[in-house]
Length: 181
Length: 181
Image 1 (cartoon, one colour):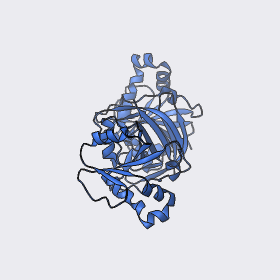
Image 2 (cartoon, one colour; image 1 turned 30 degrees about the horizontal axis):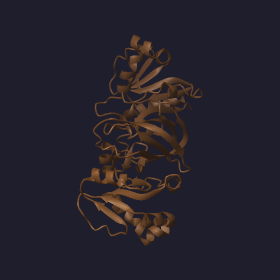
Image 3 (tube, one colour; image 1 turned 90 degrees about the vertical axis):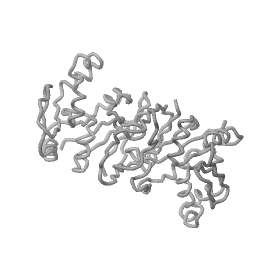
């Protein structure tokens, strides 16, 4: 079965975005993004809001800012979970609007490499409760927001995890990697 | 000038306590507490709520559970910040109820070793804004709470910090150490 793993920036105080849904306080550490060659990814999984932000990489500005990231984002098949069907406006996109858990379970059972979720905190909540996330890569940024949208907000029960790895980047970002218990 | 440093447990999602103000989800990693011999402490600093919890160490149950911790807590002078004067009910306690910033500044200027704040998130907010905390030791526990009291809740501006150290404990707790920018 293919591994689903989460790659998520958080502030030191546990926010995935500030109160204005702004994520510019994060380092967006591209060193972290590309550091682990063993994480072979052939599918990206997004919630709708994160998808709309990720479309930046389809623009000329995205290609100019980080050519390697833009190339990867454009070339890799993307799955978007959205309550309503919509025109994705980008290549290689599949939209899932019904039976999210069943559809992601089926995706995991298909042959292929790893599936990477970036951001998409609402979607993560659904997948955590269904036991569909195999690894959590949480990038703790050296900044306190003071308020915002908390990681895993709405998780109904305390959930223990197992720390499997840590890695410190030059930016001061620390990647904490966990497996579900 | 004496160093003031914070020792604070948080969940992976940035909470210092759950919604019921319960901190039993933390590992309370005594290995972490006693790991750094260089942190010579001769004064403990608490907010009122944390102080009431810490009084546990003055009881026979505290001495039985962790004799070394109880001995340290009983023997070390304690400073408690409280809006109202109160009878501390424990030895070696000074209560500060007025001019918190001035009083803590004066305490830092006295001769002596380091001053350790444990928990006390409301007090921390005041001290961060006054620039009185010299080091943050944040213990990220391998648990997601889903809801609760966020670290530094109410901090009015984004605050960048500088990562100075990381340490992983057997419990899966990771201590992230920061200096103010």
